[in-house]
Every structure is written in structure tokens, then in C-alpha cells.
Image 1 (cartoon, rainbow, N blue to C red):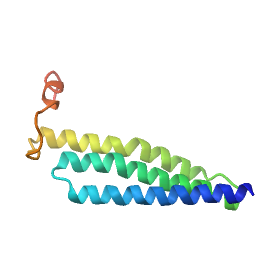
Image 2 (cartoon, rainbow, N blue to C red; image 1 turned 180 degrees about the vertical axis):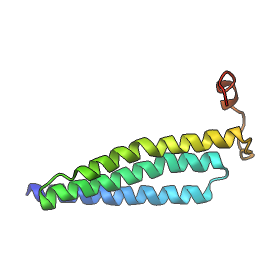
Image 3 (cartoon, helix red, strand yellow; image 1 turned 90 degrees about the vertical axis):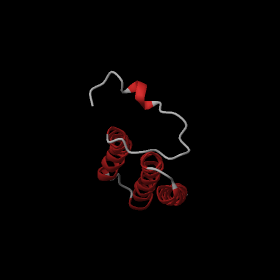
Amino acid sequence: MITTIVISLALILVILGSLISALAAIGILRLDDVYARAHAAGKAATLGAMLLISGVFLFFIGREGYVNMQLIIGILFILITGPLASHLIIKSAYNLNTPASKRTKHDEIKKDLKDTKL
């Protein structure tokens, strides 16, 4: 009984993770500039990948009966590196004066980076 519940929860997480990852991919293709694309990749793709790996983790617990530590390390690695990489991409694009889309109203980063070294 509990095995069926854990495997069903794992299936729900895998489906939800794949849908969020697909939406992130569509967002990367459809968004206007590098700033919005990096935001979609950093937030939605990270969440989708973490849900997918969490679903696989639960599946191994429910089906095989053991905890796979490599999946926990993978979840933590994605949790740390996904948003960090998108942040660094946005910062480097800003430092290279990459133009934003025409829908961008004002520059909020300029005053934040005023006192920092580039």
C-alpha cells in the first residue's frame, strides 16, 4: 500500500518536473533578451530538474527500497549551480552592455553596481 503511494507521488513529481522544464524551454525560445532568458533558465529549469530528480529519488525508495545518495547530491548541485549560473550570465551580459528589450522601462541594476568593482 505505502509502495503504491510513494511510486504515485514519484510519478506526479516526474510529470510536474517535465512540464515545468518544457515551459522553461519554451520561455528560453520565446523571451526577448538575454536577461529574461537567463531568468527562465535559472528559475524554471532549475525547479523542473529538481522535481524530476526528486521523483526518481522517490521511485527508487518505493520500488527498490533504498536511498540513492547520488540523487541527493545531484539535487543539491542543481539547487546551487542553476540560479548561480543564471546570475553570473546576467551580470556578465550587463557588464558587456548587452542591450535589453524595448519593453524594459528602467535600469535597476545600475545603482546597485555603482559602488562595486566590475
